[in-house]
Length: 185
Image (tube, rainbow, N blue to C red):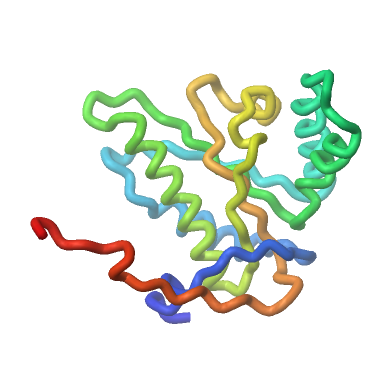
């Protein structure tokens, strides 16, 4: 796939099934992620891969997070348990900012977001379906602790990856003029 076709044609793929990306495909995805823009070469990111029964354990962690609310409905707990089972592999993208006098935390969070985008692009280039999801669990401190995050770290998102269940949809054409302007006008 040519680079410009890749960049302009990437789409999120929600319907995912086995098989998961191979170790070789994952290596390519992580090498792409590690090329994200990174002021001062701080590498303010890290990743967790969750596959197999780890997905069920993550679902239990999600359910325990919800169960802290005494009003939670059983159906919500069941949905939380099933959430990680929507793909054969999840990659937790974690921003891990480092103290630096010239690189504010926001730049480091954005760098981690760029690393997540690199994962998605490398997946798409290899025919792997992937989608970046957040939702309430990405911002839940109970979930963060359960995944072993340090106090200064944040979940940027959960990348769900696998084989597309159906063919990829075509990326919608967007009018550049709706998003780009010149200054001064």
